[in-house]
Every structure is written in C-alpha cells, then in structure tokens.
Image 1 (cartoon, rainbow, N blue to C red):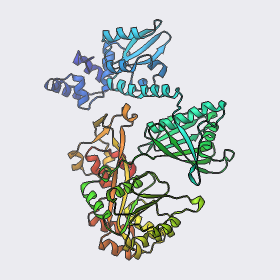
Image 2: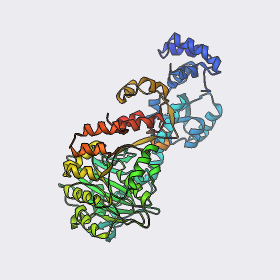
Image 3: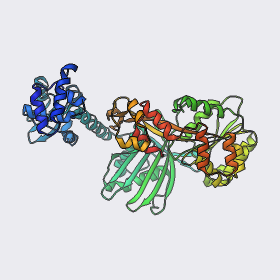
Length: 573
C-alpha cells in the first residue's frame, strides 16, 4: 500500500463519509497504527474494519483518480488486457482495463509511478494515449491471474495439436487397434483440431473426465479437476454434431445412431504418456451428451503412505492387509479413490512368493508382477466367469474391481473363507452401510460376518493450493453445520486458498483422502450375525474407536490441509 495514506485523517474521513467505517473504528486504528508502524489504512484492513478495496477507493477519491473496483477488473476484455505484457503487468501491479477510442485506461496500484507510466506509453501503439486509474493491488493481481491464463489458452488453441494419436480398440482387445488420426475428410479438419485441443487441454489440466454438453445456444465443455467440474470453453452450437461424430469415429461407435446411448473406448498415445479413454454417449433433449473418462496407463505412483491416512489408521489398515485370508472391502461413490487405495495395497504386500490376480473393469493402472484381467461382458468375460477360472490359477491374493451382483459376491466370500485374501469395492455411503449393502446383494449375514476383516469408506477432498493459502475466519454456519465446539473454533487457525494462476483461481490444488475404518471385531461380528441395523453397527464401531469420515475431515481442516467447505461438500453428519 505504498501509493497512499499520505494524510491519514483525510483518508479516514473519506471512509466514514462512504459508510465503510465508523468513528470508533477510525479512532482505534489511529491509536494502533503508530504502535505497529503502519499506515492507518493498513491498520483498518488488518483490524477487519475495512477491505483493501474500500481503502483504495478512498485513496482514489483523495487523489482525484478514476477508481476501478475488482468486478470491473475481471470484466476487462482480453484484446485490451493483452496490450500489456504479462511480466510487465505483474512487476508493476497494473492491468489494462478498457479502451475508449484512442485512449486505454490502465488500473494501477500506484498511479503516481511516473516511470511505469512512461514505460506504458512506450509499450502502447503510437495512436493510443494511456490514462491511469487506481485499483486495489490484490484485485489487480487476481485479475492478472484470471485473464492472462485465458489469453495463453487462446493462443495455444490456435496452434495445431498434431502430437496426439487416437486408436480405436476392438472388442477382442488391442490386436484390433487402428490409428484413427487421419481418417476424417479435409473439410472436417477444424473439428479434428477442436477435439484434439479439448482432449489435450484436459490432459494438461489433470482432468479425470471431459463433459461435452449441448445447450440451446452453444456447447459447454467442462473438465472434472480434483473431483469438481470446471467450465473451460463454449464452442458454437453448430460444432456439436461434428464434435460428437469425431468422438464416435475414434471410438468405433455408430455415427448414424443418435436415439440410443452408446459406450465405447479409445487410446491416446502422446509423446510421453498413454491414456485410455472410456466414452459414454447419452441422448438428451438438446442432443447427444458425451462424457469421456481419462485413465492414465502410465506408472502407478501412489503408496499407502501418500493417500492421507493418519498414523493410527495406517497401522490398522496395514495390519489387516497382511493377513493370510479374509475380505477387505472399500466403499464410496464413483471417483472417491477406491481403486487407487486397492492398487496401493497390492503394491504394499506384493512379493515374489505370492500369486496376485485382479479382475477389473476397467484396468486403470498396469502393475508389474500382478496378473490383471480386463472384464469384457460383450464376449462373455464377466466378473463371475473370470473368477471361476481364476480359482484354478492357484492365487494367493485376489482383487475384484467391484462386487455388483450376488454371483460375484458369493464367489468372493467363499474365496475368502478358503484361505485367500480378497480385496474389493462396493458402492455405499459409509462403512456400516457397506455391510448392509452386502447383505442386500445376497450375502447371508453369517457369511458376511465370517469373511470380513475390515470395511473402509473413503472420500477425496481437495487440498488448499500452497501458492495462495491464507488464514481466514469461517462463517458461523460452517462451524454450526459441522458441529465444531466453540473452544475448537478459537483454538485453531483456519485456512483457505485465495485463488491464483496455479490453481485455476479455485483455491485448491490436488486431493487427499478422508477415511472411516470399521474393524470387524468379535462384537461387530456378533451384530452382523444377528442382522443388526447399520445404526447399531455404527454405534458399536464408534464405541470401539472408529473415526467417522466427517471427524477425519475436520481433523484435516485443523491442520490446514483442506477447508470446512470441502468437508461439508463430501461428508454428512
């Protein structure tokens, strides 16, 4: 805040006139400012009496400068913003806001910086005059992060992306793979480039899913990044049919069929990675919606130690996965990291002396030393049929991608009761309801109780971006909804991300797990035998030390790893 606060009392009076602060607040700031050796405006912001934007609007009025609020900065047109190089804008905390005929207005933190203004005039075209106004520095930096990212992306999309090669796979496997990169007609080249760009950008942005959704006036393309959908572009409505047709071609789907859902797959081979793409096409009232799931077939880089377990949870989990027989079930919705946890478990226990086999749909990662079977229902290779064959393959450890039906569940349970360790997943809300779900599928309570060693529910929460992490005061409603007692509210410091270029201005980057581990102790096993309700099982597990998903999530917020809003988003009471 070097630009102002030259006449403290005048700034204070302007803030009072604008209704931003009261007399009492100004008096307190005037008293404390000399003690902290800061200007009165900085002290008002530090005490929470005014925002930086409030103070700079008063400074602009005092210096008779035009003021641009944070909203106006974000509304700046990209063709105006790009008139100033990003490096210069960052170095001098300024941004071009708007152009009015031959005048370009630039918002600056310090409009008295003569050197910066002189350099601005040199950068600008000869027929353009530079006029300067004032804006809050934090708002300027945020606008720079937001707008220059778009400019860079637009520049990239104009380039031809030619390093992606698409391979459509036959039902029989990789033997039928055919390069589909150059099969379209010359007049379809813009659509090819657009689809290439959509997929290439998704890979760069760490997206797990791509949604192409037809709207009345345009097509909305969204990426799921860190578990949350983000709008990234809106191609014209006229491009929709071409985009869908192109995706169908590389997925070997029926281009003429637009009334029924279709599922396909293809593989992308780039210079440094290979990605398996699962395609789902669903007819909607506005046209066909496409969802593409991206599965990186590269080296699996996770370990149990990096998933987000607390020390006591890690010890419980590790103690159970090294047992010689029994069943370990992981539950959660799609995209909650169940498969990643299972793969990490196998990596932890695999050895030369064990025969480990998996049955999956799809095989998301390839692990050396493990026999992985890809389910292909269209040719009769189902979970159940695969498992019956695997029983004759002398396995020691078995991973079943998902227990979906009674036949698969029956084989898994019997397998675990005959001296083998079985890992699998079930779609359920929490650990106690997973047991109820198994019984509902068709597993008798006495078999479920006898076979289960550990049931774990998990969710993925976004972690705070380390580049823009800052302390803040959560809303009272957040504390209330999460049931955090007042003493904990005051005893802990709470954090959130401000939003920056590194995290796409979301405040989050990356994810970590929150877990709920239910050990099947003799008491819990007795309740399962008695076909007790999930509430009774939950009460017993909590009494024996089980930490719920929400409790584990709150612990992570106390350590500054994630936010209260994230825990509210992914967990229930």
